[in-house]
View 1 (cartoon, rainbow, N blue to C red):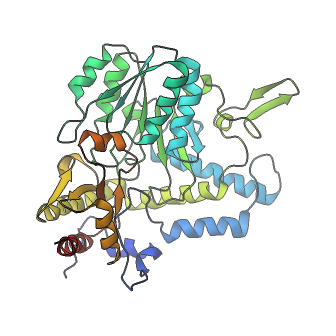
View 2 (view 1 turned 90 degrees about the vertical axis):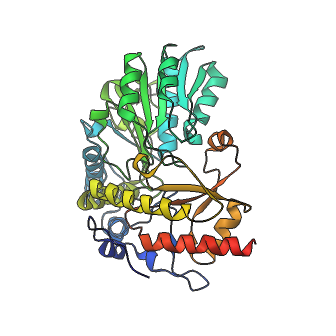
View 3 (view 1 turned 180 degrees about the vertical axis):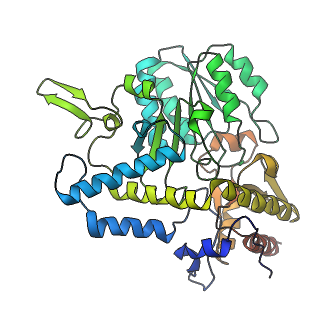
Length: 414
């Protein structure tokens, strides 16, 4: 089978950086990893950076004045500075470490929203949101009596911006939306949505879990008020993410969690919170994971986000064309020019879990289910989809193997 390596990236070299792509499954098949939307694989550069921290510099950060503590602090804060540069934040003080995108969104919901929203205030979401950008607002609605409205999704998987403009006439306090859908792959016009929201007097929170790993993101150019993303989807470790927030907003917000490191002064009957970003980082943080996060940002920066995006577009365009050839396959979402590296589909007469299980017999890893987006699946009248997703290490040859696997599924189910 021919290899299809585009000119923009040296895919053979990149794939050599990911040890897991060399492993074989129990039945002797080489792993074909098409589940990067759920979590990306990790290059050896990230793995070695975390190992090196534990071998050479393991200590708790801040306050310690011994060599190991100072090295650990430098690594931890250095990663924050590189992450800030990666998304063009105006200051590393605007980068708050969290466990993941979900915690970042919850931080805004618990700190900013509970300090600023009252019964009857409107928050606008979309019908394509991940549960992490739905459930925190449902919880706040039950507690505080806020109102929720949703930007509709059209049949071709795009947001209905005219409906959004009509909702803005109701003077919302917050517009919270995904930059890129984890199911449809739709890349939403974040800059336009933010501009419209600001004109209506609303703040904005962007779920960037799927966009930061795949696109060049400039939070200042977007003028986002809050922007959330996770390391594990962008070649970094699990257990660490980021909330970006404008300095003025973060400074005005109350702390999220209380404990060590988030304080300036503590007395028996009072405390003063620390300055940014430490005000929102209570307790011993994920130090090794921050080191790995910094290494992942270095890795992606060296390769080039524009080249990564171009490669993924080429793979996605090819995948959509090949999948449409398979009788009984129904694809969801917009065409390749309006989406990222995601292909969600159903196969007539076969449950998505059966599709995934049979593909796994040939070492092909795809995800099946509602992908933490049940309302979106209900919108399209289906309980679940199969989802193949692509990243900088994906190849057209892997797409061909996926298509071959689907023909095998069809044969097994008659």
